Image (cartoon, rainbow, N blue to C red; front, side, top):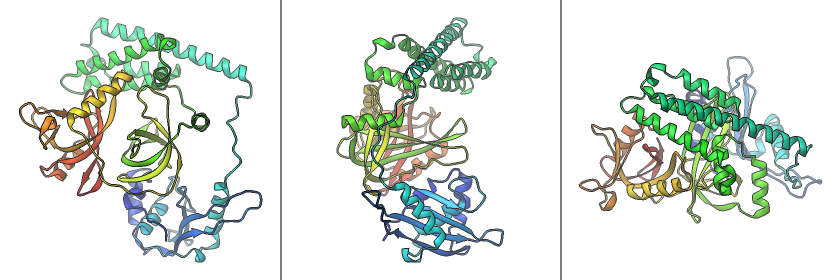
Length: 468
């Protein structure tokens, strides 16, 4: 019998909120016929050493025309196929089918798979067959690749010099007029950074451009952004004198891309992949340049390490990677080079996700110290992931704060340690939900903590993980 997914895991695959609603409306047997699910028997292959079974769900959904839409989902991918004309992936029919299956409304009978679904799943099965290991091919022309790298480095250096002069002018002339000038000056400079292939600097400039309209105290926040940018520019000028991990982290922050194939191959050669049972602490989607970026935080049970895996979906599509919050999976992770290693690539999974217990947390003071330690490694670090235990969200005249209730250094009261809430990252409705769930009692909360405060991502209520 197939291990069914939760509805939350299914909905996490949706490319947008509208698809979630449309898929939920199709999560009823009414429009469906020919429903089925099961594990397809492995196909024998004489040219390969191994075989791979495929788990799938299929069904016909009545549409507006005469022909029902043929919908099938490869659960091992996951991947989906549907004859509907939607450009969104997965479409509402695939989401509805998965929700039906997760609710136990799809019979499991792999012997009754229709020919059209069997043909598609078999094709997916062929793609999953192991292939002889191949090392990443090097550039066809190493000399040309070296010239391209040198040209890019020169463009980035020119961009760094341009931005440095601009920042000096902003501080020299004062920030009193920044709110009158508005966002355009920041966008103009950010566009120049994109042309210089320094997208990371462009993103920081665009964030800085939102400060003048962010309410009381905006000059201080803007000056902080300027200071971090200036620090990165000066570190870039001294790149050859930085430690290897710190230089690699800076390059990534500025905008250099990390090649996943090269990263995985190096980990295979050096045996540096970290195999562990990883609990999924949180997941969050955001829009960047018309793409959907999914951030997934994990914590290893044996290693104790926290990891951030990013997945990107094409316009109108959700990222293919979706891990259920509050569950755990055994997998190999490969971490990017960094002075404070966090970013990682999900290399190989060893079995399906399974329920996980509530993660252990720390008090507010320990969370601040964890961020300080990470910041010591990478001084331009914005936030660090932490799990807080026995805390509540409390609104007051100065804004929300996160306080502990269990006594000790994390408790509320005279001398108690508490964390402010970063309102630029935390939604108002999420904070009220967090306060309502706690009911005044302490609860476990995962989120990101940084110089501007804590932003909750997941809360645990009655043993269940609730995305915020």
